[in-house]
Image 1 (tube, rainbow, N blue to C red):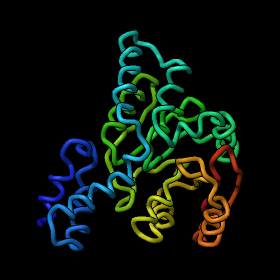
Image 2: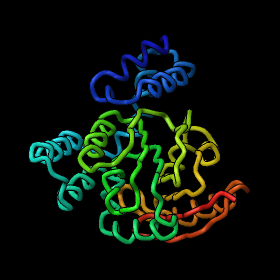
Image 3: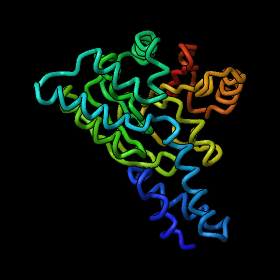
Length: 261
């Protein structure tokens, strides 16, 4: 099966929102492994589910769009309650909600109140921008184009200067320069696609400070020794151009702040 045909078949319906460059890359890789068309398309869809489908409720973008629409009609900012509701729709930010103030308070202190931020693989995290009042410029990217459209609408409401662009962080890094970068639960996802990609992305980003987090519970809430596993691997493999400036377990995340030397 041609990779182009596999990409077209996999991107129909459920995965039509995924950045086409990623679907095409995965299709090329999977078509080299399978002879049957059905097996190839199934493998592509399986990888897309792991990368994005597992973190979202089926109608999370529709529900988030409805909340934004009400605020846009009233020409007002989203309330704290509305922002929390939006964040609860995505698994990654939902897990963070009970500890959200502590999480961003730690980042604000250790990152020394950055004005500009880069966030590849952002998910719904940019909706929490108000918890770091110093941030005025927010440059984000993701493979889910629905999320990016919502974030652009939110930036307009909140008066935040920034862009939300489709990008596969496993293949490229944003070219913007900023005070800090957020890599929340992203390194395990990148390294599952290409060993060592997470550290290479850190080196490629034009920032001096980074916040990097790892999950310490599975999506089902199980403790599988993830804190020790990720912590030991991160600290042992951290490129020599970085030094750890802070480390904390907050809720279900192991959070590091690192500075470029």
